[in-house]
Image (tube, rainbow, N blue to C red):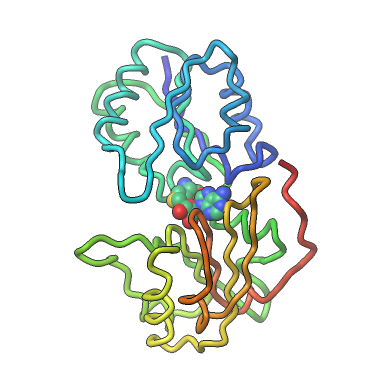
Length: 239
Ligand code: SAH
């Protein structure tokens, strides 16, 4: 019996790995997040038990409960597929689930996924690195708690390179302000991809100076840096 911690990619089932699609297609139990597109969950057999542990901003489902659920089902069903948006180990708390399964003696396997941090910019023709424009990229969470974000935005600004912000919509005004304080100029291009790789995808192009007042809705991936001004052979999502 094995629990598979599977990356579901950013939306479009065409961006699943072959291994992920095979596992979902024979799952007995699918435990998925809110961000996993219904078309991906729909690959599971009709007989599969589907459990939505969707986490909504502001009302998080207790991670301990999810861990306990995976341990319980991991002993009852085979295969159990824990579907997580993008890659399971990029801000997905997949590492905590892996640790909980190890502690409980339940076997698991990690199936890497296509992360939205790179794939969404790429799919709209924005390369996260580009000769002459960016020699590095940083993927950073924009989420913060009352204690702060734990991210030194001004240092990030000084480090140069492309900045890809996940979970950053709510705090975009503060993030933009900190990056400008750190030395990024306000005309720096920014592109936000809302609901990327889904039929509802919306691409919003703006600048760092205008990010605070640009209407945006989560989930969105925000790309900040000179590369965000590029648009190399964009292609519409196929789902
Ligand atoms: N493990 C995921 C990221 C989880 S954090 C991955 O590798 O992609 C969740 C954040 O990812 C969202 O708040 C948003 O910033 C980004 N994201 C995930 N799916 C997205 C999508 N379809 N469109 C835009 N942003 C997305």
